Image (tube, rainbow, N blue to C red):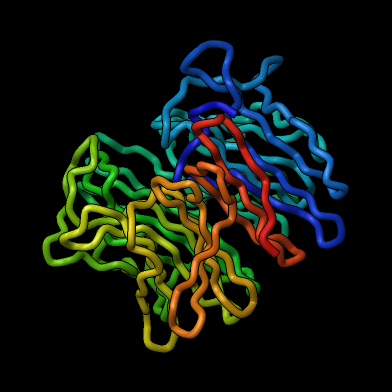
Length: 387
């Protein structure tokens, strides 16, 4: 694994199979020279055997310049079994790769994407129950003083991409995509953050939106229909601004309260459950929080706040409870899964003795949490299971 294989926003893991279990882990491998990386998929088949699938740019493995926090891959498998990989875009035009055969090595297909002039960052992916794919990414419009979130759809039956909508925009703000999750009704849950234009590592007003492909409508968690794109005045705000919280354009962390990374799942009633990192007023560290939507609206809880955490978080629903995954900044054990038992959050180490710095988690069709665990210090990518 290359040292550049680290991000908080990405969706580098996908799974498949209700009988045999398959896992696909997109990652950055070492490049041909220092400061570069190549893109691969580590594939685990139903017998547990591993293979390494290259992501191809013509006759060569796709290779790009390192850019931690931006130039990392996201992957999804469509209903026909083709891999789709978006890799290494930080205000770049499309870098998109797709298998031409079922399970084959992805090939460069940037020309298939809408508007080849778009400048793209933070692509996150989800597969719909019917095999279509949905993609959310930040699209730069720097001359307009904003960077918006756009939603795209892969029509699996016709093998075509199209843009559904600009989903979020506000003047002097940049949108940071976090996650896309489908529920059992076929509705798409959307999660994103806002920062001062043009960019900042500290974001604010974590926001939620639901899209119903069957009707083409967008709505808040309470069912209120909203027009796309939403703005900061119409978005469903999950984490409101604290009294001293302010938007600041900064290339480094400006300090103060704010959000940094978030992921989402849905419960058995298809209500959203969000795990996110938030630095509270007066604190110098990011706590881990949960936001769950129910009859009383958004309910926020603190999961962990004893020490500093890294920009790595995820959440799954087991059928009876949420599991929130997070990473401590230091220590012998760093990666943990927390559950709420009797009103108290209890955490369990999921990679004892390994200095995990980043992670992704996906609950597969057999109700097992598949773990994507990144060890930067030793340049290792781990696969794990949490039944």
